[in-house]
Every structure is written in C-alpha cells, then in structure tokens.
Image 1 (tube, rainbow, N blue to C red):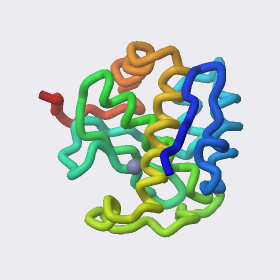
Image 2: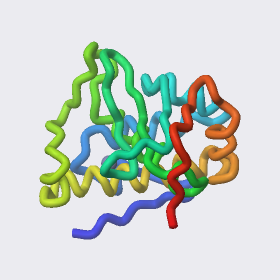
Image 3: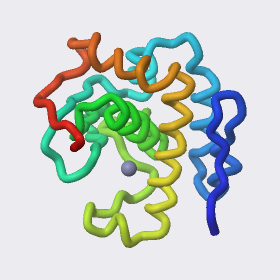
Image 4: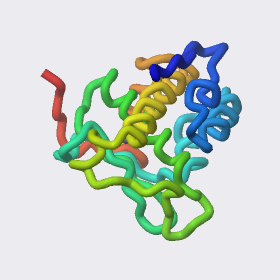
Length: 165
Ligand SMILES: [Zn+2]
C-alpha cells in the first residue's frame, strides 16, 4: 500500500502517513517544537553530538550509537545530499530509547545487506526520507541547513570532500 505523506512546512503528519510506526507521533511532536532552535540544539536534543562528513561508508549516512550518544556519519559533501542525509539520520533516532545508555533501538535493526529486502525496514526508510524533507523545510531549506555544515567546525568534521557526480 503506498504511503501518502504530507510534507509541507505548515501541514504534515508522519503519524497519519505511517500509522504502523509507533514513534511517528513523537516525531511529529518534536518537529512541531523545533521552530527557533538552532540545528546544534536540535541535534543535542536527539543525543547527536558529532557529525562527520565525507566518511567513506557503504551508504549515504549512518547513525552510530556510541554509549549514550550518537555520531552521524555522512558520505557526500554537497548541500542537498548532506542536508537530507542529516535529516534522515535524525529520523532514525526516533526508534531509539534516548534514555538508554548505551543507546538501544526499540526495533531490531537488520544487517545492511538485509535492509532492502525487509518490507518493515523499507517503511522506516521511507519515514526517514519524509521526515528529512519536512525537517529541512522547517529549518529554512537546504541553503540554511548547509550553512550549519560550514559554520560549526566544533560539531561538524569534514573528513574529505566526496562530491556526488
Ligand atoms: Zn536509513
């Protein structure tokens, strides 16, 4: 069944787009509260304390739990992809119990090579993509979000500049 999700800045509901995902409502509530908060503050709320860009990983991005906090690793260093990947990885924090230390996912995470085969995981990936578009919109668009990458050297670490060709 195709998902119909609204992702305009004013009117979105991940909860209605993804009724099978228990954490979608929490994501809606969080997104509704980010107005006026810096991206750094938003990431801290989601327990993300470091973003690495240009990391040679076999995916666009990874959310890596490290004890009670996360590192986000991003492959590409270009404005659109990097911003959408960061939003996507923030979305993944919603299926974690943020109070746990070490951080634990509330749903089992399949191995990389299994992920594309599992319908249940594909829904989560779609949720993360939709969340990401809303998140980038709410933060003023790609240009605004990308300035976070360029201006926060204590938070964002550019390992190399892998550009999408
Ligand atoms: Zn994902």
